Amino acid sequence: MAETHDVALYPNPCQDQFRLANFEGNATYLIINSLGQTVQQGMYVQDEFITTNQLNSGIYFLKIKNKSMKLIKN
Image (tube, rainbow, N blue to C red):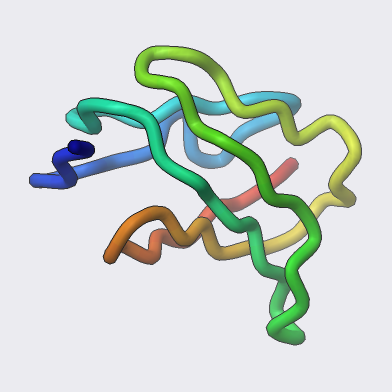
């Protein structure tokens, strides 16, 4: 079971990838743009990076489990 206490994503802003701190386990994630559209989804595996090289620069939101975090892509 994935734990989500004090989860943070880093680096933020990111270039081509980021990972989560203080997230234990694996879980499905969504990256949502400012229009509310899902632009990327996948399975987060603990301690691995999520690549964002296909996303344009901008502000996004990462949703994973019951958390939503702002993600800035440079």
